[in-house]
Image (tube, rainbow, N blue to C red; front, side, top):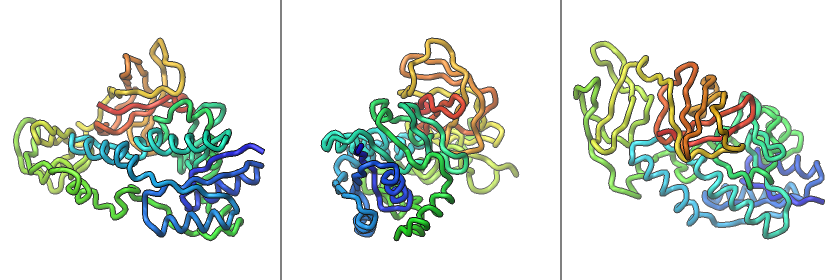
Length: 331
């Protein structure tokens, strides 16, 4: 019987994964990465016992702080818009799963992400809840051993499966917040870690038109409250060096060319320009065709149709149909 190490939070997704993997004949070992509260910990322990799988509990607070929290805070204070899950997946989550799998001689690792991993290739999940974007920086040695049982399901189907399995967490709400900021107050969280920048200027077409309350309170694409000359204005750039926020009209937010640094290819690095589609944020409605040019550790992406407000620190992810080619951080 093949062993698999499953990232097990005690939520509905990981619980259904455990049942599906057991039904496929795997010997399932749950791994709970303890970085939240006692209630979540108790849910994981109780649900693992209900399903009948062993559960390893590991405190990941030090690794989380070093590899994810610090980078998240530094990125925000540089005026970027980081995605902590994209940072966490390869450096903490999948690394911890793979380390434990090697310890116990497990062939595979698994999570409850809504995407597909087949023969070392990453694909989109179902359109309504695809999470392949969040996995763009997974390392190829991690992907080679990854299985994603929920990739062929929609969330509503998983809820129905949880009910049919009579799982105690079948109706547990989904977690929507950043796991290390459970109260969603990221400003207070940042203030506890670093000295926050002061107020500064809003600049529109080179002219100072007002004051902002601190660059860390804004993201590119966000609308500035109120009107200016009866027009809505939006954040187009955040400059940490000058402590200024540049504003633009809606139509000025759209860009045809995007550059991504530290690009993580999930295929052989192409020697020629590649036709693909690109996603510049975790949304479903924007995925235009593009041509990608590999230039060292960067990729220059020229879109057939402009994308709205690509933000520094977010990820640009390339797709060939449903296959994920890789992703890098927008500069």
